[in-house]
Length: 524
Image (cartoon, rainbow, N blue to C red):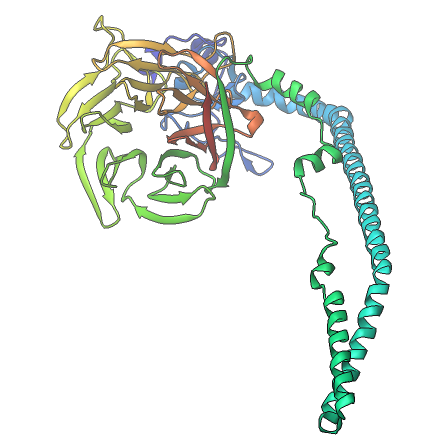
């Protein structure tokens, strides 16, 4: 512990030496406050280190090693001192919350509810007006129909009289056929011909259909135009100022076609196999799931270990990089370990253009590196034989990566690596087929942090990046130029953690298990 501390360069606002010299202590595990243990658990990154400091920038307890790595530029204070101070000011903060913030929140909630109620009332009133207008039109048509029916009463009366004459004639003939004299028979024939002639004049069944009701086409667009719409222009302007970049030159039509939740763990990897189905892997799981765009689970596959990343071969076999430092193939009826990566830890895996495996490997899971760190991407055969290594830039000394977290291969055979440089920052490193660095993308210049957690390429060689720091999907051209933020928090995107595309259907997995699916069309 002391030797490790002496080697570290402390760049925080509170140096390591000053922290210890000012009486920083590690609370004993038995210390209690109102019956609750005051000891905080060991650092979740450096398991042998106690949490003795407080990062005031991140509002989280950290260990001594963390303070000199990911939090070296943050404001840090001794944890006991921070706790003592917070205990003294917490009551005052609560008074501010009770007297100022809570009334404002209640007022805001009331205003939102009242505005919603007003909008709904106006919509109901407009609905009533439209229904009344439609009712008036219907009553007008029914009135005209009744008027026409009156005009046809004479016709109906004539038809009824003629029907009675015909009935009487047939009864006379049928009852007296053999009793007619010759003169009477001639008279009956003449009467028959007269009735027949009148029948031909009156027998016009098509006449009843000459008066028709021509149905009009119900056009929803015109109905919506008459009804009205909700104007969100002012709201959208506010949201645009908050979340969006400038209006892009390249136009993309994006439509959400699916959303569901797959547990509460991060969706760390996904591989679509059609426009409707994809395989998902959730953190801390020993299973893969095939799901539809509606979240329906089609099948599950046991992995035999915890996975970090996977891809699917042409024959449907899954290739996983696992936490037990193995690379394995998984199918419904077989699990086969291809090779071990020990002592290195595999982070991500994808298939190379020649059918080999591309694997990123690190010596530890820290988001920082030292001179002795190993942070490398290697191309390997299915037996683990290394055929190419990507670790340094052309000078042979400058490391390419800090923590190569995710990667993909473009149609131009460029290797695109999402590289984590700290707990909240990262960059995109793009190498050509020979392993030379083409460019580095670090997010939009001058904007907030950029943390690429997932990357994929579409059929037009655009690079799509899931950025959890800005809750956005960046879309770049093949040379690293930002075309636009394709999907943002405005579309409900929160902490995107993985991303994959099949044709024009984009799958996005979130940190808390949320999966969103979009149809993306490039309008040139």
